[in-house]
Image (cartoon, rainbow, N blue to C red; front, side, top):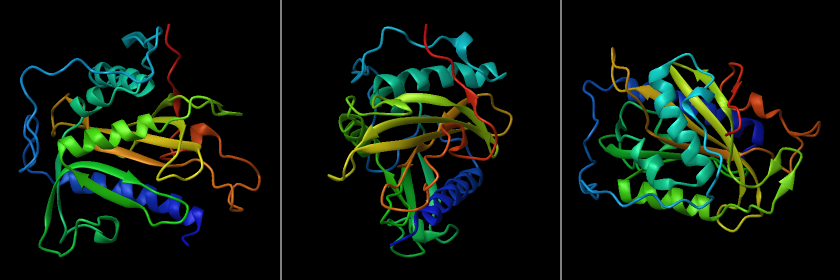
Length: 252
């Protein structure tokens, strides 16, 4: 069994490795689809929310002094708290991962070093498993997000609040911005627990002001059966990268 502290550190390493892999792109990939995946139609169905909210966040709520990011960030924050998987997919872009140039231990799709993975990133870690990154087709990425939101237990309560998705804030992480959030859900039939989620945004390409995310990262916020948090759960503003979290104000 991987020790939780190791798993957390490995997830952060994984985020770093994925970001580094993304930085090696030679051309922008907006508007493209991984080969063999479902192509988005021109007329999209209206997004279906799981947790309708009467208090959406406004552009003025964004704590970052970067209007281009804020325009996208506020869409993501509202989508997270509404459980709107379709909008999250629309704010995401696929990416390529050359298995010969990345740490393939984290990528189960890298069965050999000559494989090039092409799709949307969904990375996760469990207390008993090594961090794993799946590179998914658009349809599978959407389905994974829908299952994640459908597994949320809104009746859950702890010192950090209820179980519904709630954005913690945004922080600088590497060369981009990371939106951090939490919710209580169960993975693969495991007991419900509070999880931490991350959407890391990067620019479309150098010199561009178009921000997007290439996928989702999730991990348990606490490990009840370990001594990692013997002193208590970590403060929410310490999850993800080391920079201080700028709180995202609640919606109006």
